[in-house]
Image 1 (cartoon, rainbow, N blue to C red):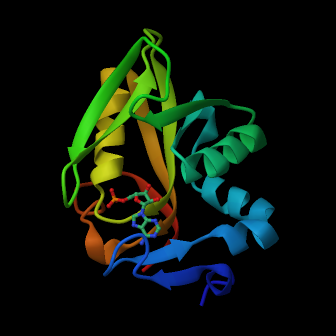
Image 2: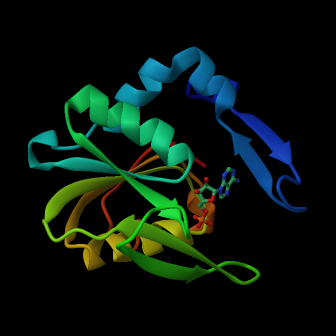
Length: 166
Ligand code: AMP
């Protein structure tokens, strides 16, 4: 067992019945520095301009990674939080849709996409599309937890770096 695992709380039926929520808060309390280093492993940082963090736990992890590697940080937020001009990407949830946004820029950047948990992959797939729309080249995806039994990211050939795999 990875030493990080004992600090992740599995919370059944949160936020909805049937979901086992991975609460990473205790892990961040005791091992934030090691987590940040682990997320940065296996990435060629010479080819990276900035870290894109997905709201909201991706902000905590992504900002720490950017600071550690001396790179920029870009927040990718839920609909209606960023001031215009923004570009959007909507994606299907179990019930309804959700939308991610970036402030629209015209400078191409090489980025790393960061989030805490990769589950079905809907969020990350939309995040990648949104980056492409904004002329960001996604160099790698870095996740703390990959629920591999729920997604096919590896089979699709995306460069996924995940610290814990289930
Ligand atoms: P998905 O789009 O299904 O890959 O879900 C990914 C997003 O939902 C991430 O931003 C996660 O923070 C959150 N998420 C999904 N499943 C879980 C889970 N079991 N525990 C914690 N967060 C989750």
